[in-house]
Image (tube, rainbow, N blue to C red; front, side, top):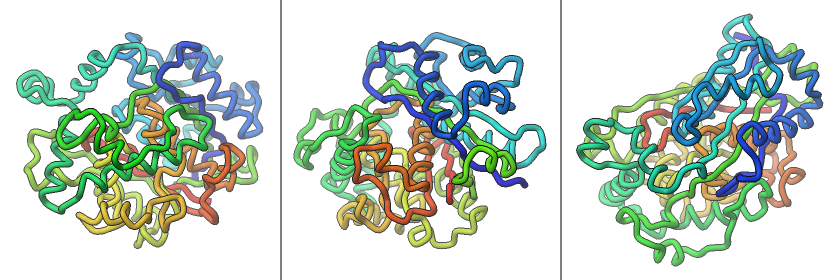
Amino acid sequence: MRKVAIVGAGLTRFSSSRHDANQEEMIAEAMRHATEDSGMTWKDIRNEVDMGIGAYCSDFFNQQLMFGATVHDYFGLCPKPNIRVEAVGATGGQAIRTAYAYIAASTLYDVVVVFSWEKMSEVNYEQALDFLGRNLDLDFEYYLAGVTLPTIHGMMAKLHTKKYGTSREQMAKVAVKNRANALNNPFVEFGANIKVDDVLNSKPLFSPLGELDFAPASDGAAVLILASEEKAKKFTDTPIWISGTGCGTDKLFHRRTAEEIPKLTSTIAAAKQAYRMAGITNPMKEINCAEVYDMSTIYEIMAYEALGFCEPGEGGKLIDEGITENSGTIPVNMEGGCFGAGIALGPVGVKQAAEMFWQLRDEADKRYRGGLQVKGAEKGLIHSESGYGVYSVVNILER
């Protein structure tokens, strides 16, 4: 197994609508950022990159098939190989894991670029819910039972409260924390100073959760450049290594019991794999910061528990005690997470990795408006999810 590093990262601005640019232009924007970050030029990209991985869910949202090949051509990377990775909200994390495997476990490729994007604004709210519903069992869960991803999160919140006593106030504090963190992040749109009461009194959606308990949809793009150890040293003096990776898959929602619903089984499995690979035995003490999938307030709390930051049922306690604040013991979603950037399905995990890349290189305060750098961060975790726990990916990054 060869060592694999991230040597460059780039982001666009994530907002509710990027009608100022098409998908190719958004990805080019992120790619320019990534090449500047790595010290590479466009010529270097064309000469050095061995393979491109497209991470996106654009079939429905943009009515475009083979979009990865379109982008590959746009970058001038033909005839080099290109593949597509898709796992809904876990797409970005899975693409990183795939790129890692191609470099680490073979001699096929030395440099792989992951380009990821989504334009959720191409469809209206009703269409977006319909497309997201197709991630469920179409015949039974969606068409027959009428289940949607937001209703699943409401059920998770109800059962988590019933089993562990997690309060609505604890859930609301997740939205308050992440929206506040996003205020200093120039790459995102949804930063705001909101209070717990604002979340509790927001428009009811799926009991017990309201409108402000969910991250909004967004448009955005992200790019990562990964390289083998030999190539990484050619590009940068400060590579960030991928020291662990794990993936888990859970049963479809309608097959889970009431005991299984309030926990993220696939995340537990993915974290165990990644920790074992990275040699981590006590994540609460050994992980300095984390980017977790926060589609809803309850989901972040459940992620704390599944990732081993606390015992089952104690996620609400972590948010109460400020442990996951930027000033806390283990900061989570330091730049705002999905509550700050919105959910652009494909690039969520790649965006997380870019933000962690800058954190671990002590560059966060250079990239953002200041105040978001976790001091002394040497080891970080990124957690990508499908939206209701079917797919989970955990990647560990370290200096």
